[in-house]
Length: 368
Picture 1 (tube, helix red, strand yellow):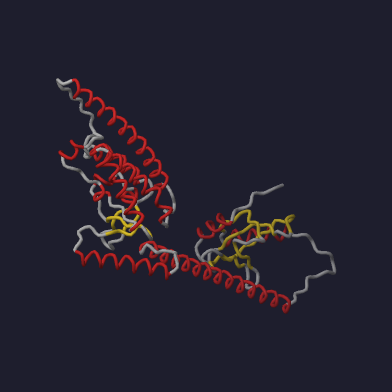
Picture 2 (cartoon, rainbow, N blue to C red):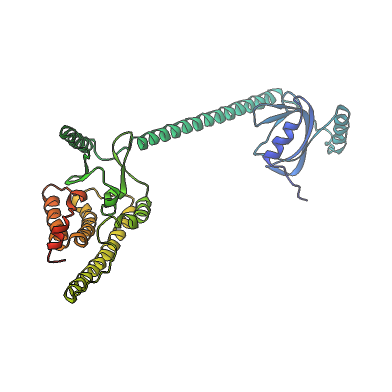
C-alpha cells in the first residue's frame, strides 16, 4: 500500500497553522525504514523561520521538514485523545519474549542527544553562512550594475587612455581655434583626417551620412550617435522636401515661337532628364550605404573606412550642382573643389562646396 506524502511547503504550512507549544500528532516514514509507519505526539515549536520541532520528551523529537522523514499526516491532538492513542499504541506493540527486557543506557542516550544538538547547530550555522554568501553576491552584482551605468552615462571609451586623451586634446585645440576665429559653425573631427562642420542646414543633411548619424549633446557639447535605425527614418522623412530646395528639381516645359530656340530647349530638357536619372541612381546607393551603417553595431574609426560614405554624399551633391548650374560651373567645379579639400585638409563642407552662380553666368554656360 502506498501513501501520499506531504511536500516540504505543505508541512511548513501545517506547522504554521498550529499555535506555539500546542500538542500535535505526526505520522511519517523514515527513509531508511519505509516498511514501518511511525507516529509521534508532542509539542510543536518553531526553531527557525522555515523549520519546526515536535518534541515528545527531553530527548525524543523530530524536525520538520526533513530530508530523512516522509510525512503522511500532521494534526492537532487533545490531552484525552493523546492518552487514548498511547494506549492503542501499547496494545499494538508486539509482545517481548520472556527474559528479555529493554535496558536503558543513559550515557548512550545522552551522547546521542548531544550529537543531535551539535548536528542541528552545524546545520544552522551552514544555513546562516549560505545566506551571508548570497547577500555578498547580491551586493557585488549591485556594485557592478552601478559601475556599468556610470560608464554608460559618461560615454566611456574602451580605447587606451593615452589614445583617448590625445583625441580629447585634438578636440580641445579645434574648439579653441574656432573660438579665437569667432566662427559661428565650429569644426567637428569625425576621425583622424576628416573634418566636418558641426552644424548643417537641413537642406544639406541629405548629402552627409555623418550628420544623419550624429547629433550634438547640449550638456557636454560632444557629437553622440543616434539610436540605430533613426538616421534612415530621418533621411526618408526629409528627402522630398529638401530636394525641392535645390534649383531645377522640378521639370518645367517651355516653348517659343523660334524653332531654333525650341531645339535648344529640347536638348536642354534631355540633358536635365539624364542628370535626374543619375541623381536617382546616386540616391539609391546613398540610401543603401546609410542603411548598412545605420544598423551596424560599431561605426568606422579611420578615414579610409569613412571615405566611401563621404564620397557617396559628395556624388549626390555633384549632381545637384550639375542640375542647378550645369557641369562646367556646377558639378565639375564642385568635384574639383571636393577632391582638393578632402585630400589636403580632409574637410567636407557641403555648404561651401555648393556654389549657386548668378543667372547671367548660368545663361552663358554652353552646357545648358
